[in-house]
Picture 1 (cartoon, rainbow over the protein chains, first blue to last red):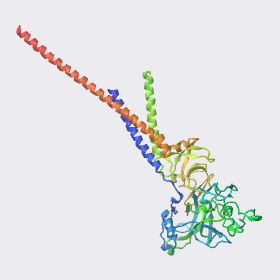
Picture 2 (cartoon, one colour; picture 1 turned 45 degrees about the vertical axis):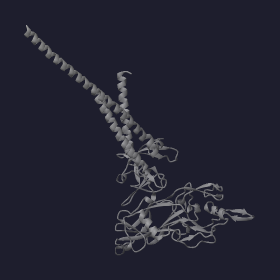
Picture 3 (cartoon, rainbow over the protein chains, first blue to last red; picture 1 turned 120 degrees about the vertical axis):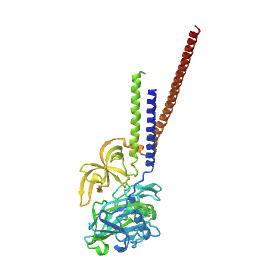
Picture 4 (tube, chains in turn purple, red; picture 1 turned 60 degrees about the vertical axis):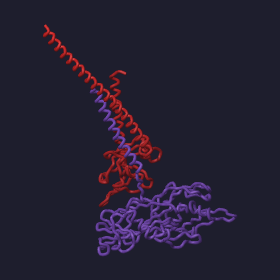
Amino acid sequence: MKSMTRKLLLSVMAVVLSVIALGTTTFAWFTITNVANVQPFNAEVISDEGIEIAIGTGTPMELEWKTTLTTQDIYDYIASVHTAGFFFNHLTSVDGRNFTTLGTSGPGVGSTEGLLELPLHFRSDSTSEINWTQVVLSGTTESFTTRVGFTDSKGVAQIANSTYNVNPADAIRVSLSGNVASILTTVVYENPSSLTNTVLDARVAADFRGTQEDVLGVPTYIGVNGAVNYFYRSNAMLPGGADAVTVVDTIQDVTLTKVLDMTAGSLATAEREYYGTLTVRVWFEGWDAEAYNSLLGKTVTLSLRFEG
Amino acid sequence: MKPKTKKGFKIVLSFIFYGFVMLILAFSVATMKMKYSNDIANVMGLGFLPITTDNNTQSNLLFVNVQTPEENMDLVMNDSVVFYELHEHQFLKGQIVAKYETDQHIFYQVEGYDQLLTVSDILAVEIAEVPHLGSLVAFLQSPKGFALAVLMPVIFLWIIESIVLVRYMLLYHKRKLEKEFELAAKEKANEVESEFELIRKQLLKEFNLDK
């Protein structure tokens, strides 16, 4: 009987242990199924210690100063400016501050349509400069069906009605304009080269007409590899101004880049010793080798980090 | 089977059972820490994660010390650190090749990665790497894999243990009843015996009177 009681006690213990294990594993399983994906845009804009940040237009006294600029604050600002919703459009810029559309005949006209412009304000009592320390610009690689055969930016011939992988972030540019040593300075970023991306970098009066091909006995320019060639193959013409393309110089990585020197003695205007504005502009570079029309409806995510 | 061998076999089985339950519990508790995709499964700071090698050919299992930003301030050159890459949505590891300190911040340059990392970007420091086991752990940490390889065996174990418990309870109850019956029978026999004793005494008394 004594050994029976011992066996029974051990068995009770084993059941209790298995019930605990069952509860724990079930809870853990629910945790796994609810893992939240960390998205770059979910990361809030958090200012460095001692720095306050605001978004919008108006005088420093009118702005809503925060230590953390949430995703919702940015959405709210975009919604207030672009009341009909915001969509990227083909734009190009020679300096990262002024923009033109890509016309079909001759150079395009100046435009801010399809340009995302975020005026950021910084103020602080402890630091006078703002450094850009990190950028994450990403999009989901998707495929589109080619209407015509063309040569892509990597020099690979793509046939008509084939599947071609593209990433909307490949053609996006991000520029930051702020006063550095009292001079308005603009830094432009584009993603580095990848499987789907070719870096365009700076172009000054560059010929984007590409090589010539015999079309009905007439030598005709067919556009440089990538989106320009695809445009030509689709429309039998090149975008206006393809013979003299000038686009702004870009960087492909960000490591402690000073983007703003704030103005000292701003106590009266901004209630802090130092105050400055920084304009973030995001656009779809029309001359980029990956600027395919099919990308215009896609979503890109952007995260920026600033430190004092 | 000899009794000694049988006893040894039972001890080994018990060790396997309790070891398995403890392993499952530890794995589950570690998994519960994974609330976001950049969380590392860990128990009291000792964590593990699957990580893909640089050339994307195999997935290894990495054992790490999960770090706080404060602990990351003291990292040194050649420390192998783990961070979450937001472009690719995956964990990456790399060796620290440079450390930059400003008045308020510390930045690390990691081999093979073009952006600086802050103390809050670094999630863990590598302890050891086991080749080829990464895919298995990644499968175990997926909802389907966890259900198949962890949850199902535990349910099975719970059913088996419950059946064993019920059987033991029935057996215990049966033995208890048998013992009670045995006691009752013994008591009855004693009662009969004492009655016989009384009768015997009475008869002897009457017999002596008749004389």
